[in-house]
Length: 481
Image 1 (cartoon, rainbow, N blue to C red):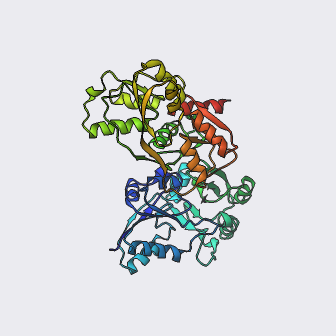
Image 2 (cartoon, rainbow, N blue to C red; image 1 turned 180 degrees about the horizontal axis):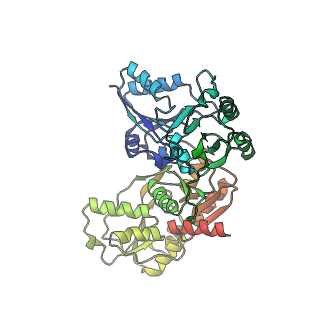
Image 3 (cartoon, rainbow, N blue to C red; image 1 turned 120 degrees about the vertical axis):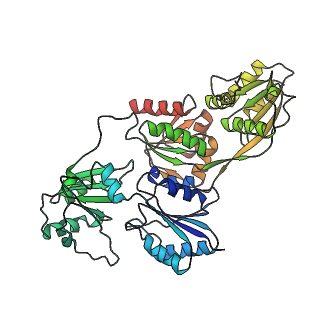
């Protein structure tokens, strides 16, 4: 059975500039064929079983040839796969989408095109430059500076009115400027170049046709870049009188979908440029036992609490079964999870560690009590050891496991990176992910921080309290210092 191909415009810069239709299609696909210029946070929205194939095209670096990309799409579709061809910007704005579609048509492979936000408009826009303006520019032109034969006479564009936008032209900007002046364009024509537009690395330089080449060299701008000529290039429609607390700060958040979404939402709302890397997945294991024989139920994470509630509902467990039983938790997140379902924990240590939880349990239960521990497969043994030393009977049920999913390895070059568990740290580094030297590590929990020290020499901070707010407070406190 022949598969299906979605040609999806991923937008430009940050992942949240993709359309809702594109995101929904991405979630359905078995194979993700993606460009280097997309925000790889988008990959975290794909199915965990998806196959990821990078065919990125970036100036000066090796990439798959177009024929190879076409062959991949055809081969995977003939295998019956549902494929997302994830392309930066819009598929039909110098995105070679038409070439890929021609190949699919030749092999009678069904497809759908999903438009994307083009960098030709969005990058200048988010740099404060409108490509049209009723008084100064009633038209705009988008031109690729990169042609199949490598030859182009830029002087022919000098007669164009309005705004002229060049894509993929940073390495030939001197040829563009010289050509436009040669063709009759005034050297005083306003000019702007936006590097890494719509991202936390965005850099904007402005000048005129006469000096923009030297200005770009002086500021060492890097690919990708959008070049703008025309009267609108002198505008700067950016609101700079309302600056959020984390404006200009880049943060990578790692962990499960739930963890990265919660932390990213808070940090984004505070102005940070956030990159999500949801490389950890929760897998259910053992079922919870009959609850009648236990006097205390202990949770070491919100995931264990969620699975417990889910299984109680699935098993139609009467909530009155929990009457008289003490509930012990580590951390405010686990507390809030249970509170959401009407269960108020009785035991919560001031320090959010497993050993402190064990000591607190010992202080609050009688010698003949029986404790049920519900937690992860790779949980700390400190809890068991302390209960055994105090002769407290217990059953330790590992009701879930944390596993690494299939996301490709990544390099984090942000100002901060957040880890929520020791497993998250291990799977990040052991899978081949790397950090820049400038990146400060933020850990939830002392054990997570100790694990991070084994893998990295970067600066490490431990968030307190161990929550989203604790992470935010740790970062803002560090910035102030």
